[in-house]
Image (tube, rainbow, N blue to C red; front, side, top):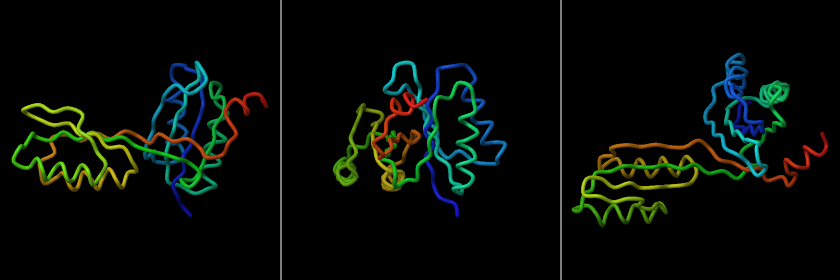
Length: 170
């Protein structure tokens, strides 16, 4: 049975690592729904969060294959219930003073905030789950969304064992 899995992998910062990792997904005909990368809590170590919809057997095989890569320190997989996650979205709307009160009501309802305001356009920020981000987009569509950009998922696992604990075991 397919479900959403969050794959977290920790790597050294080396050229070509992202390419080698994405090839693993391509060979297994798995679509990456979301991918983010950043430095993690350990200096010099980078964290990739990859979201896929697949079976448990397939995600186990992928994680095991990823861990065989030379520059990968450790890889984990977690179901959605085992992680805390958020996404970030930016919306660019034409500045419309006539509809200001209505837009303000929508922003309050969705816990969004205005990042910048000019005479030509307004930039709005929303963090949350994908369904919350999409709901705000649907409500703002009537005002003529000029641009919309959404980040990949940023997630941390609920289990308490840290990367440092795993590295000490190695």
